[in-house]
Picture 1 (cartoon, rainbow, N blue to C red):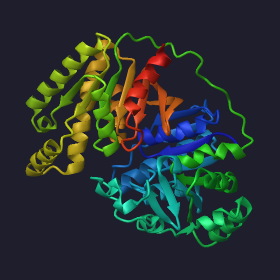
Picture 2 (picture 1 turned 30 degrees about the vertical axis):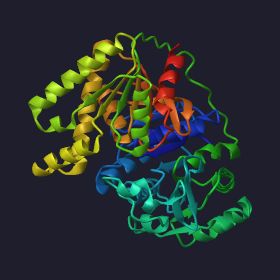
Picture 3 (picture 1 turned 30 degrees about the horizontal axis):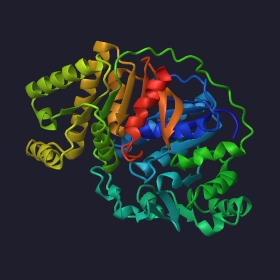
Amino acid sequence: MRGTIGVVADDTTGANDIGVMFSNNRYTAKVQIFEEEMTIEADADVVIIDTDSRLDSGNLSYQKVYGATKKLQETGCSMFFKKTCSVFRGNIGKEFDAMLDALGEEFAVISLAFPKNGRTTIQGIHTVHGQLLECSAFANDPVHPMNESELVSILQEQTVRKVTFIDLSVVRQGATVLRQVIEKKRKQFNYCIIDSETQSDLTIVAEAIHDYKVLGGSSAIAEELPKFSDQKSIGNVLTDLKINDKNGVLVVSGSLTPQTKDQTAHLISTGVPCKVFDSRKVFSPVEYAKEVKRVSLEAQDLLTQGKDVLIMANNEEEIVLETKEMGRQLGIDPLSISKMVSAAISDVTKNIADKIDLKRLIVAGGDTSGTVSRKLGIKGNYVLKEIEIGLPSGLALGRHMLIVLKSGSFGNKEFLSLAINHLKNLSA
């Protein structure tokens, strides 16, 4: 593993997730949002391009990942990693294919397990906190419901390339044996998914695969790969954050996952005021504008008093269902409704950030994080410090502020409270 490591991630929170895995090993990691005319400076050990393509059509996601991979190739990257959701949501087949096609390669090793976050793969079957993937909360994902647990089958449905897996029993025979089996698989298959149940298993996998050109899957393996590299870090490019903000910390939630619902409920229970956006207002331009203005002004007033504030779309089940039904009657599909709500939340966030020069922001939800970042003109971020597993803080690029962009399904109940204190300590 030599030279800059190039990563392509399909959403903003996933990009930061893998970034912090590398930075835990003293590598500098930088996330950049994909643009066709973007330029990349190799001023970090790991350059991660966020294509924000998980909710795109298959063809559009292919084009984005192909273009992002080419950009990384031009930068001189020597290893390439296609970061996916840790439960294979999204256009995984199209995106893996796009990376191989862009590089002119025909083989990639994939590790999806993330034991520290409850994701394990045994005999090619993926589980989440002990539940089969098809029985987990991800079975109810509104866009990419996960209705099966066999990873080979999930990926094979999305690609004409051949997919196989290597069982945990092989992994536990050690890196040398595992490498030999991978090489045999390479002669007949294009994608090889490898089992892991524990972090120790991932260490063995990393030793066996650390010098393959193309890797993919969840971020967890990235915590182990640097242990087998002789690459020297270019050093920390961030010596002085120079963040001064007397306002409170703004927390924005656009995720409906059980984890984020628990986190917002806990934050409210600690006394943090919450301003709720009525999602039913997104269908009328007049009502939309009034609601955005109301929430913005109420939050601004509290933030300028130095109080932390939570902004969120109403997540009560009856309101969510009513919003979906209103959209259905107007011929609007659930994905489009979700994007409309994210857009509203991002409009509120921009109003506030512009008015009071906000410097500290936390966003919960992958799609919402991407939407808010684009609205604020954020082009990416340097990865700073890990708050919880896979959840780092960052210094934004394109807008001088400290940010935390949280995957909807990650984090303990207290995470949002921890993140607020973390940003306050960083800026202090």
